[in-house]
Image 1 (tube, rainbow, N blue to C red):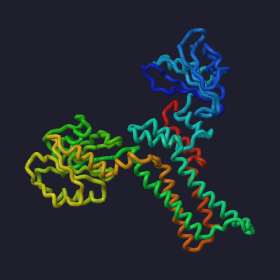
Image 2 (cartoon, rainbow, N blue to C red):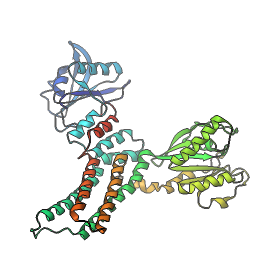
Image 3 (cartoon, one colour):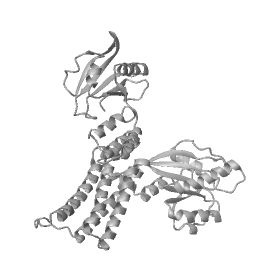
Image 4 (spheres, rainbow, N blue to C red):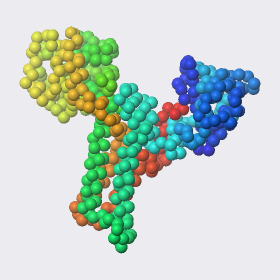
Amino acid sequence: MNDTIVAISTALGIGAISIIRVSGDDAIKKVNSIFIGKNLEKVASHTINYGHISENEKIIDEVLISVMHAPKTFTRENIVEINCHGGIATTNKILEMLLNIGCRLAEPGEFAKRAFLNGRIDLIEAEGIMDLINSKTEQSRELAINQVGGKVSNLIKTLRQKILEVIANIEVNIDYPEYEDIEELTIKDLEKKMKNIKKQITKILEESENGKIIKEGIKTVIIGKPNVGKSSILNKLIDEDKAIVTDIPGTTRDIVEGTLNIGGLLLNIIDTAGIRKTEDVVESIGVKKSLELTDKSDLVLYVLNNNEEITKEDLEIISKLKYKNHIIIINKIDLDKKIEEKYLTDSNIVYMSTKDNLGFEELKNCIKEMYNLEKIITQDLTYLTNARSISILKNIVKIIEDIEKGIVNSEYIDMLEIDLKNIWQQLGEIIGETYEDELIEQLFKQFCLGK
């Protein structure tokens, strides 16, 4: 990390301003060599300086340059940000000039990677930055900013400190048994402490489901027989004619997707091919996809026709949905009722008429209640959302369960200490106190260029 890196930090295209970011020990010196204005090597830190970028005494652009001295910067290195006029030609020209004088084009996420390696941020904060960039709702933005601001990291650091205190107590008891003023950690004490730590981790894991909903949205699939109104429901929900609607069975042969914002949380909706037995090869592939998506979804909207009796095939599907979050939509309530609701007693039911635009608010309210969205939105959004971190915590719960078994089997406390050190190590992996180089490389490659 001894070289100076450069990248365009704003999206390329026509705009008022583009920002070119430079980081490294020689960042100020290199930018100063192509700048006409104040001597950037002598200006105060965290100042903005007016001037021009010049090549061979020819003005390239009028710019504002931000100068920030290490260590009070994002990367903890000297950083210069060139605010030039937007436009591909001007921005690329200045970038080319910086590359010609010895700067290296930054890899995706390399600025954030340097911030991590220099101790400016931890891994949870780094992942939060990426989530913040990709956030699509106010709730996902708030969730990400809590990660960036260190709230989530503090949860893990507190747990790690508690484990460290237990380990230290065991070590002192073993190495210095003659010290009477040191509290002896008994098996019963250890059992109590591990129970408390396990409770805290379990709570974090349970709440991480809320974080997943906020970050990724609710993967929702609309299924049902042909011509029950699935495509019409999708179109009405997203207020867009995305799915083709006809009276001909089998019109939808492939999946059609749309997004709905419900109170700040995203519903990622997929309209599927009508489920029925068919000789049409293409349609049968669509039906197969529908069934596969049902298994992978978070929420199933199963649409029935108010004007048709429930069939054996309907009952088979409803039976399978018992173990998933699902809502039965009885559509076409503007037609004569032939459906028997006695088969639907174990399901949430919403009555709807796409023709008369009825039932859509009721459907949204039903989803809000099912996922307790009001509570999720109003409470403190301090959750783990990254699959890597959640997986580590789940593994830690298993290790704690092994410790609990060891306590029951009267294992020596110094043997249980090995598992405790493993927990401490794995908590360190979540925040990046301990890590493998391959993990760091892969994580920061997912960032955009210039971040």
